[in-house]
Image (cartoon, rainbow, N blue to C red; front, side):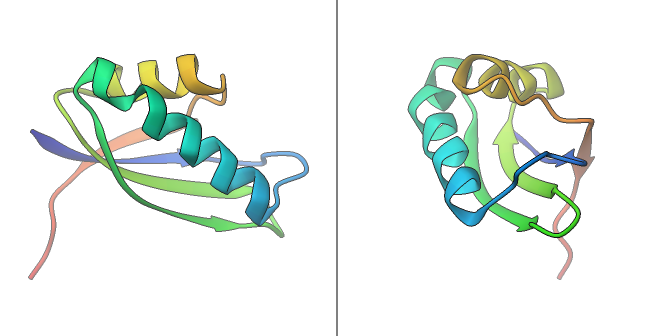
Length: 83
């Protein structure tokens, strides 16, 4: 499994509650695509959301978002954890 950071930009009407609900929906679907969402961060002022997950591919990460709530990422980047 690889680590991926997906980036959503300019999400209209972003609130803490909305992000938490979208994350909850991701968790409901993730197992179907062999994805494990680990954590998320957001900035309500500019509508940015960042999600960290373990997954077999970028496509799997995108599939979870698409099925769970339709808010696909603008960018998905494979990352490695630093020490």
